[in-house]
Amino acid sequence: MTVYLDPPTWPGHGRMWSHLVSDISYDELHAFAARLGAPPRAFERDHYDIPAERYPDAVWLGAVEIGSKELVRRLTQAGLRRRKYDPRRGAGGA
Image (cartoon, rainbow, N blue to C red; front, side, top):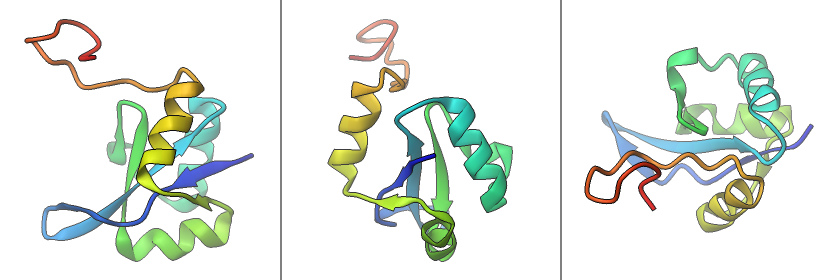
């Protein structure tokens, strides 16, 4: 089981956040998030939002630290990337 985590550089709600993804399956991602104690509401389309204070816990459980661009690349290559809907571009948001 390998999941990936980018640095907590994403601001929101007065905190900094990381993204947790799998390059294998959503099942793998959900199982890891459950072990981490991430609530289901933290899942957004193709990743979990993980607060900075939980970053060390995710790494301790085995998440591999990678940069944000590499994280998106792996997610896209795995066919698991789900973009936000953009009405100007239609379904998929490309």
